[in-house]
Length: 222
Image (cartoon, rainbow, N blue to C red; front, side, top):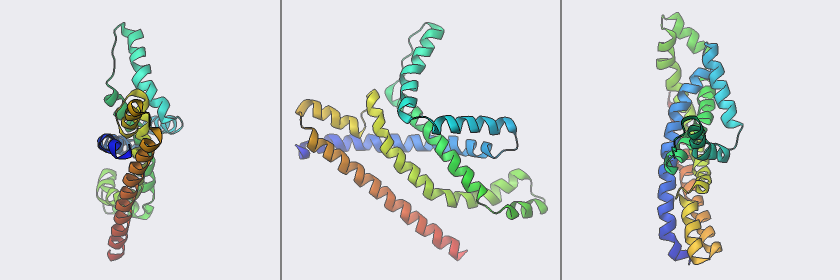
């Protein structure tokens, strides 16, 4: 039964990686803007970023998924009187992307603030504007420092996509559940799911570790 389930599980694993890649990419875009807003001198931007980050990080991803997939269409129906269902994949990726963005924002904020303040002061003394200092001095160094934690965020999101099974997204866990519903053989199928998740996370962990070693060598050579 384990061997028979593998083609279904591998299909689910492909969807899992695809969803994770899109969600984390969306999270990086959101996170970069929110991370920079978090340390902005503009009190409105800083406050908005703080509320977003605290709300997302302080609530379960499962609830966020249900709000976007079930709660949001219901709210739109109340306001407009029209049924506006959301595609499960759109809802799942949106929820995961928004969730990832809050964590990436804190990674970006920490990366920027880890750069010595003296470098900013030196750049400004040379006549560079704040935007030029951020673009040419701070961000290139910060990017190198945030790559490893971004890899860890990818791993965390890869595992969290299993929560999308509750709304019917056919990622790895959902594919396994559908196969179990037909075969009534939960143990070998869930064991296969576990092993595939383990293989994916270990592989990505090795890539992250390799990136950390390369960055460390680059820093020493500089």
